[in-house]
Image 1: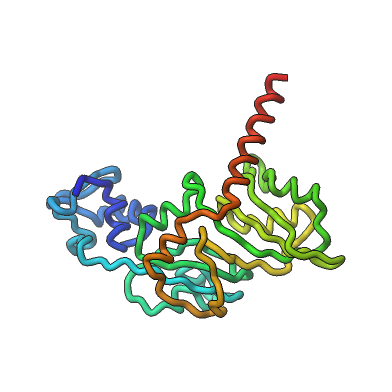
Image 2: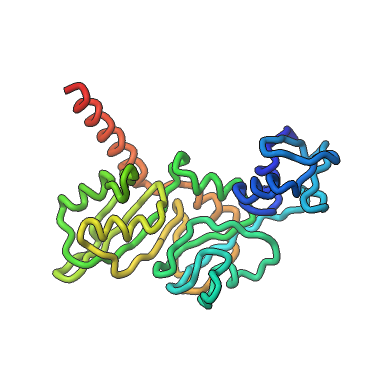
Length: 264
């Protein structure tokens, strides 16, 4: 096995997320071959002795697990609650003793598909926008959404100064004078992104549910239920939705338009 960064190896061993592992290294809690480690150090777990808090780091005995959960509303995605917050967490629903990473966090008011796993590499790949992994949502918003509003949403909006959302796919599934139900496919996940965009466009969210991560769907899984994913289902999670082609074409079109405007 080749050398790799310590925080990556620690994440693979289920210690914590890469960012949290970096802090553990900075705190002086990691050593390699008897010497204190520093951030940026690399090691080969087959040749080097890596210790975290006095315990030998081992990768050979870690069985990768993947739990899919249909998160109900008023359940927190974060593993710990703030003082005085008595709401349950998704992590408490899973009977697993080791550390689990969360793929696809949802705010407390939202529901739907989440995956918890000890696979740090997969978590990183599915979370970073550069890998263009899709997440699909079903959103019910107030009001009747017009075609020009959909175009504006799909092109991306500034939700804060200097913070513009990436192009996405938005389609009307159902509509009446009171509400509109939308299918939304995104390749990024800024905090409360759908809710913030919907409010900016004058259509606050009434209900929001994640239906898919990649091509893995929540299916008939009831709220609050979970199960272990098979290898085939894990592969589905890494396969993007077909709408990714639409998003890529729109992004290229917007870039070309921006270049033309600069030349003019």
